[in-house]
Amino acid sequence: MEVLEGLPPQAEVRFAHQPSWPLEYKIGQVAELLTDDGFMVYLAEGEQVGYLPGQVTESLGWSR
Image 1 (tube, rainbow, N blue to C red):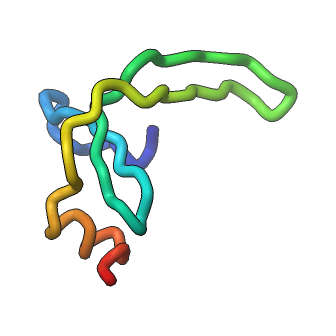
Image 2: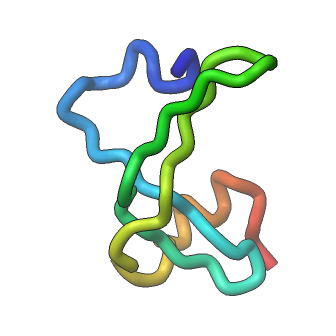
Image 3: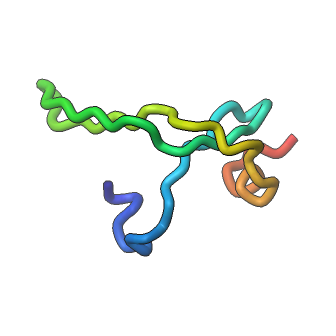
């Protein structure tokens, strides 16, 4: 939550996956759970958008 604070509220959130074969996905379902460690939010993988743009791959340090 802190990581997303201050970003434009209209920004689309996506999920980057697999550093060796970088793909991007839309966010699917969201699950909320209260545990002994506190409140947890889980973001499930949604629809695959395609390959992760090279600029994002580099920003994440996933470049080969």
